Image 1 (cartoon, one colour):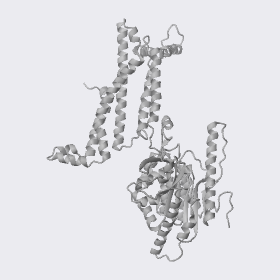
Image 2 (cartoon, helix red, strand yellow):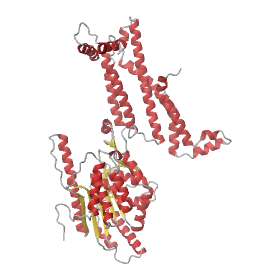
Image 3 (cartoon, one colour):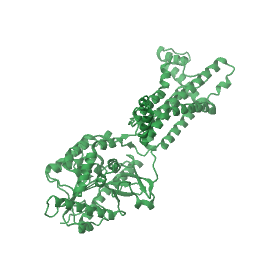
Image 4 (tube, one colour):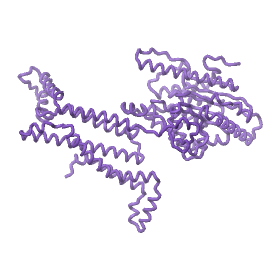
Length: 622
């Protein structure tokens, strides 16, 4: 008769077989049914020929999972036997051969131990293969952010259970395992109140019993071996987790930095100091398209002012910028921006700010109804150490998939093609330690089937805080060879930007036309330093120093933009979170905090925002 225990042990194999059958049926579109019809051979050939490379690969892997499972199960049996014989876990068997009853007991215990290891390995192998199959099938595995984390969680659970079992089960010929005899003894001590003549209290009796078991574990050769084995396995699992950390291709060599390209997407990104000429050319083409649009619509006067908007980083402080844009619409004087730039949380706001008031409600929804769980999900401690970040930003990917749609990309592309408007987002190439400016309007208008995916990828990369969120790897090619660039938060280089200082704006003017220029900057942070008593501890001092560096860098970015505007004859306008705002900030992406900050920005702008004409330390020129 098939027992429930046996069914549970073989459950991984059952699940794998059923999942493989369902997967194969779904991929092939009913090949088995077609095989029963006349001329089925030709139908099967046509169906197999119609499979994509990925579907064919996944189908082959799924068909091989069952024999792989059986093969690994055999290997697991061999490992168990090797483990038991190599470490000589049961040396008492040879020493007690003259005692038949005792020998039988030890053999029974050894058999149970081997059986436990085999079953543990079988379940582990089955779960790993099943997780891989579900990943192939496209399921989002809730156990962890990736396969490595899932395997790691399973292994850690099994190891902790095994260590606990080894510590609770004395392996002694004198005491044996925690059997009916020792269990009955504990029960009598605790419940019947029986007190031995040798002891004067129930507490002392129990203490003596437990101490004898603990002393054995310290002196028992078998007990020490078992603990060492499981500790060794725990260390091996930690190393395994390091090996299962996300891998990457080779970074672009220094000599090829100026020849990097993304297949099917040209003129979509610029490196400061390398692609300045391309930036100037893009500016000229942008103004040319705008002039053609104005002539087409019957505009005969001088071109309207070129208004640029730069949105800084700031995490959940981006709620201030979202609220300010909504309030600016209500005030009635919000312009159509010729160019919008964004970094980090500013990159998440930028596409909606670019498309105007029609997307104000989307901004409000995103920055007033989300929480930390909608941005990231924490990883376990060891995974955070051995992986690439403390948290997984899979929820942010899902949030962008919801709001960054094909329709939104088409709307952005139309503004670029017809009016010459520009949307730029900044990231940091961590390998090259260089800022990268992405022409998101060119990406949207490229017509590439990869455009939508790349658009979302760049937005996530711009908000990927190093260490907190995983970096984003972008596939590129140079001289026909494939490489990968590691991109993180653009704030690692600059917290806000308008265009590189090296860009000669006079060339753009000379090639097109002269007109008034205005620059609006939304800094999603305060300008004043926040006082805090620093503990005399290494981490507190280092953390405070890094915070001071980031604060100073943000002020320096404003200074740079101000000097650029003064050089190029543009009007400087700055908005920032006032020092009077001191709402409680309990955690990152605190919903209540963001709602209050959104309301602050909204109220200030709706009443007519008083824009600062110079950053701190500068006197605005008359």
